[in-house]
Amino acid sequence: MKRLILCIVVLLLLGTGSAAVAQDGGDLLAPEQIPGEAVYIPFPVAITVDGDLADWEGVPMITVDKGPMISPDPAENGSFTFAVAADADYVYITMSMPDKNIIAGQHGSEYWNEDSLEFYLNVSDNVFSQVYTDGIYQININATNIGNTDPDALTLTGVRSQELAVSGFVFETGDGWGFEASIPLEGLVEPGHGVEIGFQAQANGASSTDRNVKLIWSNADTGDSSWQNPGVFGRGLFFEIGQTEIPLPSEPPEDEGLTFDWGDMEWNEIVTSTWEGYKQNYIYCGENCGDNLGLVFDPNMDYQAVSEGVGYGMLMAVMMNDQDTFDTIYDAAHDIMLDERTGLFHWRASNTGEITGRTSATDAEEDIAVALIFAQTRVENGEWTQHATRPYNCRANDMIDAIYEYEVYDGRYLTPGDDWGGNGQDILNLSYFAPAWYRIYDQFQGTDRWDSVITYGYRALFLTEGADKGLAPDWSTSEGGPAFAYCEATDRPLDTCRYEMYYDAIRVPWRIGLDCLWFGDSRACRWSKRSADFLSQLPPEQFARMYDMDGTPIISYQNELTVGMWLPAALAAENAELVAELAQQLYGYAGNAISEGYWGGTSQYYFNQSLAWFGASLLSGDFQNLYPQPE
Image (tube, rainbow, N blue to C red; front, side, top):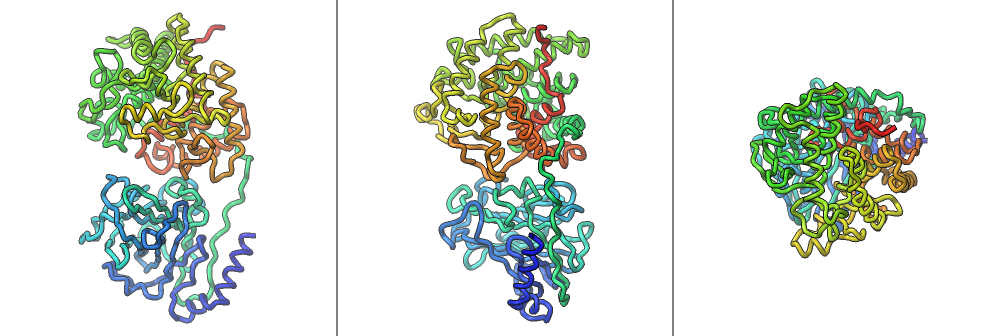
């Protein structure tokens, strides 16, 4: 059917004279686009990259005014125009956008959040690849480059953008701004009539501060997912000037649906490789990591380290039976981040060892404490040797006591940290609620004091407005409602107290799923089933994302993080079809896992890598309850 539609489009092009013009040397050097599907790249075209577009005459110009966020004002990021051409040595791209209020340089390196233009190329041997591999690139050219006089010194961002020698000029126009750029083709692709590459073009627009416009050329990208999934690119087809045959984009492979058997995938190899990559990118990354200071550093936060990362790193290390790395993180956390007053950890430090965020974050302490219990188990099993100065069991006991004293109120309410008001009632973070850990604490210490924390945590969870769908908000009260009153009373911005399932609450399916998988708690299993049932009825463009409490997606993309965190819910709900679907999607983000050691298209985001790993390690069997359970 798609082939028939494409043929009809070509016949229409012939009927309107577009192809004839290209053949006969008229106004256009190549056919017009197949809208949102394929752009024709005329060659050879003599273009000088100098900011003067006079030599683009005859190259088809394409205007885009569609996307997930459209401007109400045509003069303010209401559309963008692009064209592509080539000669034997270079591919040339020009893009421009009407923009009466150019926003630039206000978001650090996050240029996607202000006025910027993007193009994507897939010159790998697989134009249908759904993961970023060698030969697939995202190039974001932003408005801070306007006026730069060195064409080889553009500020670029995007996946693998630094691997291409992009040269160009960025300039203001009569109604906005644009650029003209070139990329050497040597080692990428050799132009030939009908040679096909993946291609995508997008524009980001901001009218005041943050991005409020997103325009996308490719019809396949309905949710701004090109930066994660090159499978939604359109096609670029080289068109030799003077040819009469109009090439068509190739057909994608047939969708095999649910024939994917996730159990046959090399999950152990993927999990091992991404753990090795995790260490190299965030722990042993040289100067950026404070000359291997030993904490888990976040490239997206100027290589600062947070206590959350200490917990993640120690959990991953103990699951991977890597005592050297476990002790490296354990020692660094105590040398740098320990709060001597409480025995807990300050939540953030720089890569010079300076504390930049004081007081504790409860989820970090919880993960560190259970990791220490698991480490003690490995000692008792004869797998590890005991730490010489801080025995794992002794420190675990001290930490559990400190968490209970400083981060639990009235023996029932979990607080976000040791310095938060609200007594765990006016505000709480349900992604910090870790009932599986609390059961292990009680087993380890021979107590039952965490029972009430578990009871009141589940009570708050099931009182939230998204409970019928298995959706938890980032922040709430102990009665399940929004915590906005607390934020207003403490002068916190309301967006830091979101009543939506965002980057905090996306971890709830993992926290709760483990309580079902490991301990069979009926509340945990019921919650996981609700989450799984909710996901199962969603259309593809809304699947495995983040949501408001009504179940409406609040992000337009899916990535390794979201898929990895929804997997535990599917596993706990024993929903085999959903597990297969999520596992297939997570596997789609593993294209760089074995060769490069990271998930998705970039290693920039340590948080994404951590949560994807936790999901995958459940599939591989590497993430287990190491503490011995009673017979």
